[in-house]
Image (cartoon, rainbow, N blue to C red; front, side, top):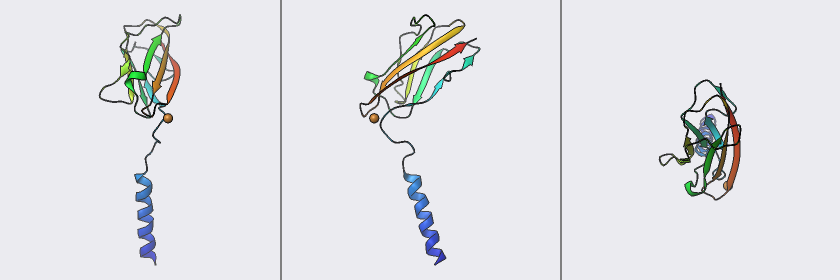
Length: 122
Ligand SMILES: [Cu+2]
């Protein structure tokens, strides 16, 4: 009965589409600006990292260090109030060099993930 098979196929597709794309839980970085490992020519005014899950603002930090491991960000690192998956901090005008972004976050389920990456200003 081709008609019934088609209906079942359509229902299967709808059920699959309704499943969440990412599992909820641990927060992992999805993408960052400046991009992880990138070399850029203009000094960025901010570092922003988007995560795969909502973060707990009270337990999530971001700092930026220069090559001498000195903190160079403006100290305003925070979870964006309008987007709980976005961790951000402001930067002064940085000179050329390699900078390291260090993040430490807790997802809403309480699980902590940490990591770091570098970017280079030409
Ligand atoms: Cu988790």
